[in-house]
Every structure is written in structure tokens, then in C-alpha cells.
Length: 117
Image (cartoon, rainbow, N blue to C red; front, side, top):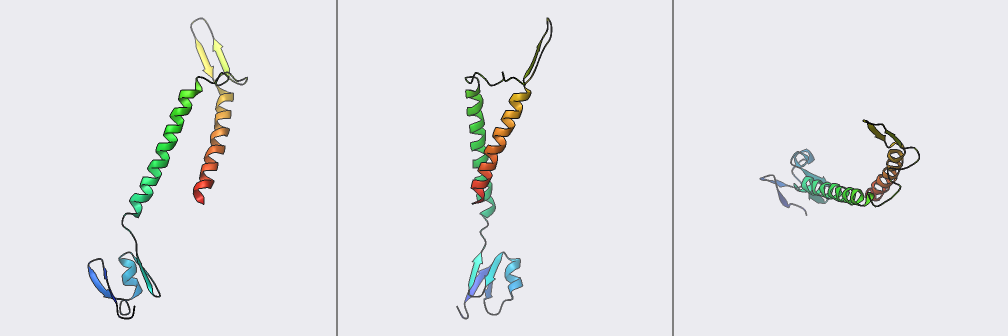
């Protein structure tokens, strides 16, 4: 690749003559014999991946909420507080919230570890 030329951002540069700083300014990484041009779509690709992950999580949450009514113990755990009066009712699902928090924390940590690989 001795005297090869490379179009960089509308400017043709000679690999041996152009300083590395000029390549970096235009989004090109220069290392010994190889020149890599960073893709302009890389931001959109990662955004698309995140949108798919968020969409999948929303789908799973919707599925969970749909099926939660069929699980008999959800909302009726021993730590849940229910107050019923003649003209007043109050329900505070403390134990259900704590259980849901622990389950979601474990699930999201598992997903985070899988995605880091």
C-alpha cells in the first residue's frame, strides 16, 4: 500500500504523506498499513438495537401484566395492607412490591450480564 490514495471526507489524501491527525479529524483511524473508516450508521445501529431491547421489555411487561391476574397470590401476600371501611378503602401492596423489585432486579442483572458478552 505504498503510495496509495484514499478519499477522506471529499479530500483525496496520500497515505504516506498525510499526517494521522488529518485522518482523525475526518473520522478515519490510521494504524500502520490499515485504514478503517468509521461508519456513519453506527449510531443508528446501536439506537435500533436499544429500541428493539426496550420494545421486547415492554412486550414482556405487557405479557406479565396480562397473566398477573391469573396468578392467585399476586396482590394478596401476607405483607400487603388492605383497609376497608364503610366509605373508604385503601390498599398498599408492600410485600408484592418488594417481591416484584427483587425479581426484576435479578432479571435485569441477568440481561445486563448477557449483553456485556
